[in-house]
Amino acid sequence: MRSIMAMARRVPQPELIARPEPLAAERDFASSAGLLSRQKIKLMIQRKLIVAKQTIEPEQLQPASLDLRLGARAYRVRASFLPGESRTVMEQLDALKSAEIPLEEGAVLERGCVYVIPLLEHLNLQSSISALANPKSSTGRLDIFTRLITDRSEIFDHVAGGYRGPLYAEVSPRSFSVRVRTGSKLNQIRFRRLNSQQMGLTDFSLNDRELRDWHEHKCRLVDGEAQTRNGLVLRVALSGETLGARIGYRAQKHTDVIDGDRAGAYDLRDFWDPILARPDKRLILDPGEFYILASREKLQIPPQLAAEMAPIDPAMGEFRVHYAGFFDPGFGYTPGGEPGSRAVLEVRSHEVPFILEDGQIIGRLSYEKMAEEPEVLYGRTSVSNYQGQGLKLSKHFKPAE
Image (cartoon, rainbow, N blue to C red):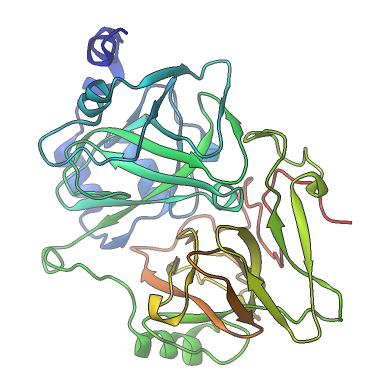
């Protein structure tokens, strides 16, 4: 097998030797502390803090995040890994003798396998700017486990301040085999800038007192009482408006391949079993099964904040919200009005069957301040697929009848 390292050296990468413009960039971001908005991400691209092998497309830009694209090759690996502080990802792949899969014309990533895929985007960050990544909403709802890896890193989904180098996605479809290609978007990245007083901080989320103050005096975060527990508490909706109403979905085990770039192409009945409301308002989670449920609360994310779904305390149950999702500013937002969108929950039980009851705590939202309000809010972009949602599968499926 050809050496992956040798192959990487032969690939022309003229865009990647571009150097950022440090003095101009410092001026651009001098007054920004917090999560960077769409307009600041545009500036990062202009200043070559973000570079790519192909032109970055306007639809990749979200209110407070950037969609990342798969590159031209995938590498199937025996197991997940982190390169550690002394290795690059490509060095680790070369040592593993990984199988190489071309993606230019599309390829199927098989359920249960693990792949590492170089991304088209690369970073040239300043020391004051770090980054965080999440699966995109559609990725999580297809049960595709996706994490970001960087060179010489000992942690997933985090990019250290000052990082300069390539980005990689670890991808492992869990319920369905999926077809992807160069340019497919499975995860997203957001950027945080710290001022000199914040360099030692590790937690940037609003505390419970601040959340209650937002809810009571600035913008109602949920449609009922704001309950907090190291974040805004979310409860699962299992009652339905009527007995027998659809309250969730469970992934089928033997299905066809799903093309990750085809929206509205599939009949949900070929991939999902509906879950109907029961008189006892309960649901037994079977170990290893994947469920799509919805929160009881309706939410809204005001323009000054962004939010991330975080797992509940493991001591509260042998299950978890499977993917940490990111909520852009504007999700469910109605200026001066009531929250308008429910959170969709990707849930998996682990070792033993577990009984969920209607209204049981199932997750929490961690909120963080934006450095500035985005120029465009979620719901007003061309790819806001989940604004105003209730219980909703990924964009790949036709609406339920």
